[in-house]
Length: 313
Image 1 (tube, rainbow, N blue to C red):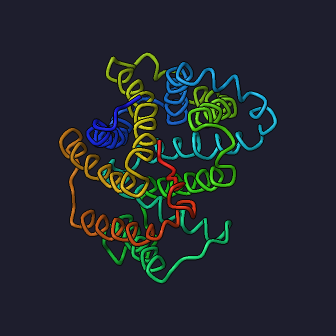
Image 2: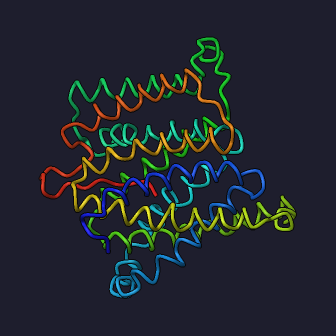
């Protein structure tokens, strides 16, 4: 789909789109109900993804039916659970905070892998986990000890930690049956189940909102949702996985740190959010912790030629 020579600029572009996902999510979060926004995003993603893997879907429909409970859990945790928490959190916190806290995902996945998959970690990786945890705590407490001691945290930051939790569960589920179907089909099947189990929540949410939000939609809202369902979902997902095959998982994963950078730049430029000293300290701690935690390929398979990284869509 993409030529090897073009993968680096495309990979940077994918990280830019993921950074923009948080900024646009923040911009429209007050106008579109969060569960509905998540639903619309993934419905659009499925519409664009299905033609790319239609033959795969037909070939694997028996596996889909036989493993429906598995795909249901994957769809609930990584597709809808994660996305709903992100969009809900953005109603209360900044796009910068959400982007930085989300970078804690690889560390939390490592913790879950140790608990559920009985994987072992080194002292360096343990230090990375502690360092990243301190970084997240620094962000949600705004670097103030009084906030930490009083547990007076921003609800949006706590919800973003919930998103990290859902993504961790999603990733562990993927690792349990990592080769059950091709990646594009796995995403499509997961989206299908996510949409099926979420539509009652969408109905209840809109009865609460009285559907008034629909009359206030503008072209900006529509284009933002299209962006999040295509460029920030399907395109970025396919580019990242192609990069894993072309340049290796470890090198491709390091590009994900650009998401925080782009989210911060776009938030400051477009939303006029402020980058504080607490943001800088927290980011440095988390990124350093992620680097230490992902050493020795803990988040990949054992064979170096078969390493695989789970990306965030």
